[in-house]
Image (cartoon, rainbow, N blue to C red; front, side, top):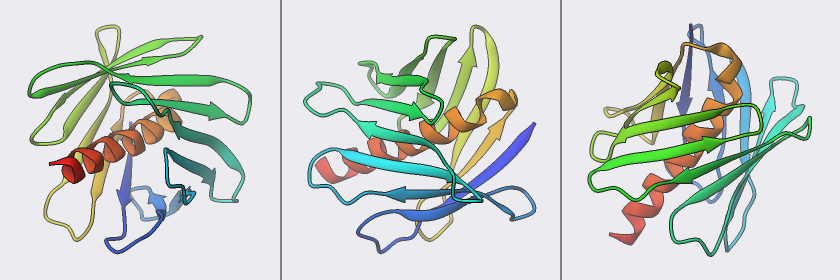
Length: 162
């Protein structure tokens, strides 16, 4: 099991922040490109080697994100239409995952078949958006980080539109 922590800045034009482990060591860096339409986020390791890029697909009815890894693999995150609960599918050539979440509390569980692979929980009493990621199946660590970034973007878009 691995725990990771994401804490974003409050006043920002683009995102730039580290992802930390339990001992507050930086494991990843997140950098968002400034774009007027869509969203592009680069995630690199502590040595600044790019691991993957997240692109928000534009002109879709429900949010959709594409994660492109440095090794050429691509993963698609698609939101499903639901009321009061969040539901997403993660599709890749090697596996499919499902995400179940609570629209109001921003807590999410990620499943591979029936097995719990990870949890994403928003930390409420913090200045800025903060998340705790609990990863039970560590082979999905990079994907869970990408998923958390996509979920945060979906939350921000909902808050701006309401």
